[in-house]
Each structure stands twice: as structure tokens, then as C-alpha cells.
Amino acid sequence: MRARHVFLDSLRLHGVSNIFGNPGTTESPMIDTLRDYPDIGYVTALHEGVAVSAAHYYAQASGETGIANVHVAPGLGNGLGSLYGALRGRSPVILTAGAQDTRMRMREPMLGHDLAAMARPLVKWSAQVEHADEMAAVMARAFKIAHEPPCGPVFVALPINVMEQETQNGAWHAGAVYSNTMADAAGLQQMADALAAAQRPAIICGDEVGMAGAVESVVGLAEQTGAAVYHEGLRQHLSIPNRHPNSRGTLGFDASGIRNTLAPFDVILLIGGPFFEEIWFDAVSAIPDGAQLLQLSPTHDTMARNFQVALGVVGQLTPALDALSAQIASTADQAAVAARNTELAAAMAQRRDGMDKHIDALEDQLPMSTGHAMREIASAVPAQTIVVDESITAMGDVAHAFDFKTAGDYYGPRGGGIGQGIAGALGVKVAQPQRPVLCISGDGSAMYHIQALWSAARLDLGIVFVILNNNEYRVLKHNLDIYRQRFDAQSNEPYPYMDIGPELDFVSLAAGMGVAATRIRSPDELRAAVAAGFASGQPHLIEVRVAGKET
Image (cartoon, rainbow, N blue to C red):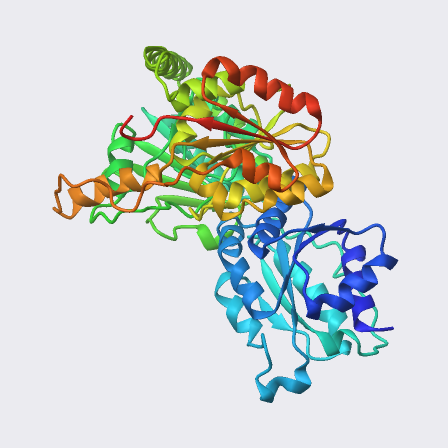
């Protein structure tokens, strides 16, 4: 058999049902042979970054390995930004790239380079298959490493001549490996005692909660302790239902802001990690002085990585959280817990009421506020809709408008690189074809991977894409304000190079790629447009003109 068959046999053996790729000449062996593997689909993308982000989100939404295929050195370079998102999101992705014939290595052929070296900083393992006899072992190791906790991407280069070599080594699977550890009982007991004795406890969740399916367990622990629950500023997954009374939303992007938010709490439990994804440097610690810091993590690598903990426990999240809840139920001051839960519920109601009044006050504004837009959109989506969110400055409005109940209802952009959402929505819809998918993106973010619309049209993926068009990089304007203040660079000058003009025409862009589109200027038209988009059962783009920073 040839190595190309071993490669595809390896995918089949490991349960792969889809490849996301942008093919080129060195991918000819795989593309040509896929005809003999009808159970493995190929999602064609017009840009490598689209393929990698789609595979990343597919892995998050399906629980399977995401497979992305790109083309030689420039193609791999195009996909590296999306690969960074997969790394920060801890996605089990195998990225492959066709490589030039190894017999030409010393001639420095067109498009040639050391692909494994290019990918290595952004993956858990990077390798090139040097001979057909290695293919089975390399692929078995790639799958194993991608799924070893913590999960993450790996890279494999596939030279065109190696793919055509003969081998007797067939594909093989590492087998059923159970690598999750159970949390130490004594450590959990000490953690339970500390939480039960807390006067004002707080919980901070990482994406590991959603990835482990531990949302209900976090809810149980929060209710048993009367704890406020936060998550990081950028998240891939839901950690607690966003309308749960104990949910307090996101933390900031600087240590001082996080520290101020956490100042009232005496015991703080970190779940998952590492924490935190900061943007701005502060000399102070994000953890207030005097607060007792606890950490529960599924892997050793995140434990006490950035902060000294009073107590850390490594183990599977769901059973550990459930054990904590059971132990605390018999020891905590139930009257004090009930009082804290009542206080948190009142604060949640007050916060939601304040946001509703703010949106109401801007009801007649044109261009419409993002809060008003999200309210109209949320009222029109079908039941069980998944939201893929890269609205950036409107993420708070998204969280307020929608009722996300569990992991799988929401996917956000981890790591901060933009362009993930509109491409990632492809992967989510392929992974969850039975559920409606809504992708919300800013105009600047959408333009990074606008080619994803073509892939949606090609596969007739019924995604509704909402593009919030404010003709600017609004988040950069906010960050420029912060920069000027932090570095004493005060200025009355406008925001340079941060406006998008001439205005982007997303309706025409969508039409050019085979996607029907609607332009909305008034909120009165938005609800019907969203409903019609979903009712069509086909990909549909809705361009919504929203207010910018100065309007």
C-alpha cells in the first residue's frame, strides 16, 4: 500500500469524518485518493486561515479531532494566525500540509521550506513524515498527542514523494487510553472546608469547565456556597448559564481591574486555567492581598502557574465539583449561603434592569445601538440556536440579550486573534447540523475570513451571519484611549487609521460568493430579517448598520 492510503486509513481509524482544507499541488495524492474514502468529507475553503479556524471550532463543537489541510510554506503561513487560536483554545486539531518532494530539498524548490519548524511554536508536536514506513506511527502519535490533556494542535508535513512510497506498515490506533485523574480526596476535603468557611467566596472559570461538560456542576457548587461566578474576558465556552443569579459576567483585561473586581472576596476558587489573558501590564497582582486562593484544574500544567495558591487539586472537574458540593452541603452555614444567593440574585436583577433601561434610552437612535440590535436578533432566533460570537465590543450586549444555558450554546474567540468567528461557524454547523447556527461578527473581523461565505454556500450550510457594520475598528479606539491614559500620551487628536472607509458592502460581497443577503438600517426590520434568514434553511447574511464609538 502507499503512504497516502495509510494516511487516510489513519483518519478513518480514528473516527475522522471531515477534513477542512485549501488544496494545492503537493496535496494531489490525498485529494485524488479521497474518492476511495466516501465516508470522509472535504470542506473546501478559499483561504488556509478559514480551513484551520473551521477545524478548530469543529473540534470544540463535535468532540472529534479537527483535521485541517493546507498547502506548503505560504499556505501554512496563512494558517498560522488561526492555529494560534486553536492553541489558546486547546483544540485537538491535526494540521497537515503538503510538502515539496524531499529529493529536491537541497535545490531550494519553489514553495519549499522547513514546515515543521514553521509550525512548531504553535503546536504541541511538529513533525515531517520522512518515509512511508513512518506514516502509520506518525499519525498514531499525532492523534494521541492532540488528545492528551491538555488538548491542543499538532502539525504533520506530508511530502508529495513520501505519500507515493510503498509500505507494509498499516494504520494503527494507540488504543483506549484513560488519562484523566481523579482528584485527591483529602485535598477536596480541605478545599471544601475552606469554601464552607468563606464569608464571601468567588469562583473564576476557565474554558475547561465547558470543555469538560461541567457547567451543571459549577452551578451546583455556586449555589451550595453562595459564590459569585466570573469567567475571563475572552472565552471559548460557557461556564455558567449567563442568566443564572450567581453569574457576574466577565473579568477585565488588566490586573488592576481584576483585582478591584475581586477585592470583596475572601476565598477565590480558580477552575481550570491558566489565568489570566491580560492586555495591559500592571505591577500589582490580580489576586487581592489576604484572599485565600484555591485552584482546581484537570491538568498539572495550569496549576499554580501564575499565582501562589493556598491549596491546589488536580483531577477531573465534574466529579471533583460534585464532591465539593456534597461535602459543603453538610458543613456550610446554610443561612449565610442563602443570604449570599439572595444578594447575588438581587444584584443580577438590578444589573439586567440597568442594561434594559440603557437600551430603552437609545431606542430611537440611528444608527441603532448594538444593545438594541442584539435584543431584536435574540427575539427572532429559533429554539436551540447556537451562537458563534465575534462581536468584540458588543459581546456584553450578546450576553445580555441571549439566554445561554449550557456548553454548546455559545462559542467565542479565544486568544484575541480576529477572523475566527465567521470561519469557525462553518465548523460548528458541520459538527452540529441539526441545530440552527447564528454567527455574529464585527465588520473588521469578518473581512479577515470573508471567504468563509463561499464555503457556506458550497455546502449549503444554513448559517445566518449577522455582520455589525460600524465602519470602524471600534475596539482599537477604546484601546487607544486606554493607551493614551496609561502611558501619559494624552491627546485631543482623532483616532488615526481606525475608520473603515469607503464603507464595506457586505450584501454585495455575500452575493458574489453565492450567499443571499439583506441590509438592515432600522431595528424595526431586523427581527423579520433574522426569522426569514433561518426559515430559508440556506446561508444568509444580514448586514446591520450600528452606531460607532462616537455616535
